[in-house]
Length: 375
View 1 (tube, rainbow, N blue to C red):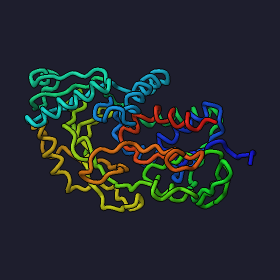
View 2: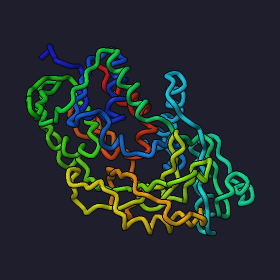
View 3: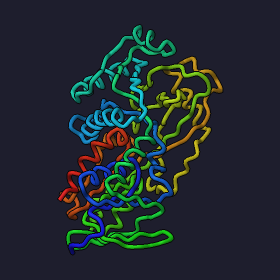
């Protein structure tokens, strides 16, 4: 078959899906993005802290390390050129015990090997001058960490996609894909089911990526990883912001601890925490309401580094869900960017487990997939 409807179809219109599609379209390919929801980026991409990560925590040479450091540099450059609002606020990772001091030393060593710029170990006295409200023995300062307008970034990437002739269709859920000779026939569900052909297929469906993969003809079941969902809730701080940096504790199992971030308007939020959902929980079964019973644990965690948190200042904000490829206490896992080498299907790319730092990494991920998608 030579007359394909599209060169590439991307499933999922989150930040990564739209960035991948924009990168492919900019290289001269015809691209369709199909999204089951009513708006692009309304699920996982809309439930993040908008932090630009430096690349401190990830094993050297892992995809998370390489995509995060490259993506962060690309993102700052892109925002400078595109006029997207951001603030390179920097962050402090604080140690409140001798054991956490050792963890800071290990994080600094890893960040240095990972070629993360702007790292500095500072004493408790130095930290007190930078952030008088904090109480900690010492801290690791990351000057390259920042915050940005992730919605504005998504809209810019969508504009790039459309400027190069790419299409986005909403309320168009993926139903199945049939393998053809060097391509696919894609069937959609929804109120107006249809079918079309494409030479290449990118599964960037986020929380739904494993379900999508199981609906692609010929996809080996053993190549689809088991996914664990970890919910993270946020509480916002009412009143004046106490910090000028983002404040992080040392990492915990499944996340980076209950940290303090703020948006470009100065509003402070704490979180996310880590709430492992029962094994086998489906994305459609997630309750995104913030459980008020978690507030006490937040207050305890925050007072470890901000003991003067006034009572009654935390209000429930929002929550998100991370698509993880390991369960509780199972350690680090990398992004799973699957190509033909893994699953044996020509023209198919699966993106599994793309949680944080996926937002920071999105431009680097997009380039990597676009290169693989080229004829």
